[in-house]
Length: 112
Length: 115
Image 1 (cartoon, rainbow over the protein chains, first blue to last red):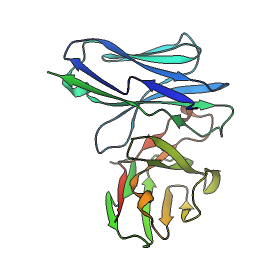
Image 2: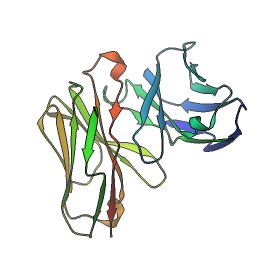
Image 3: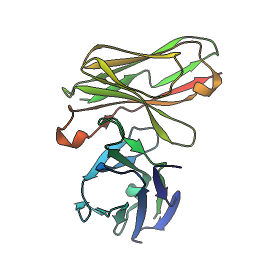
């Protein structure tokens, strides 16, 4: 069973059409939930860290929220340059304290 | 100024060969990592070193051997390459445990193709 599950696997949006990406996790003792953005041919780029349920972080058109078992990445009025794969990862007390466990990502395509 | 740099960016080689990938970070971080991203884009930890000491060693064939000459460098040596080793390998680094939420910063990746 995957410890971190992201949905949908792929999402196509028209420019300006807001939506949300989901990341659910089954681990206990969460020490942090991380969102990364990955462009084709590049390494993941850090976006946000969330630590406790109810926490929210914002950056431009992106807003990340956290509940006890999932996180959402809300994209408001997306632009074509927001097209990328968005990765969710967790750090938890059951694993090495340095270790991140990643989901398989959501590939977002924003059509002009 | 590239924070985490990997070389080479592309590596094409024959089965059975031995190859190395180099990684350097100029962020002053104590911890470095190697990840493998397969064809389905799933990113999975392979190794982690903290201040030149191995702290994570996931179930990886012993043909893979990390080497950390100093805390700014973590190289990956792969012996007797197999077709299944074809993937993108990412190096990452992070501050020491407890600092800045352990945000990991990634290199651009090395695309390894084994023919």
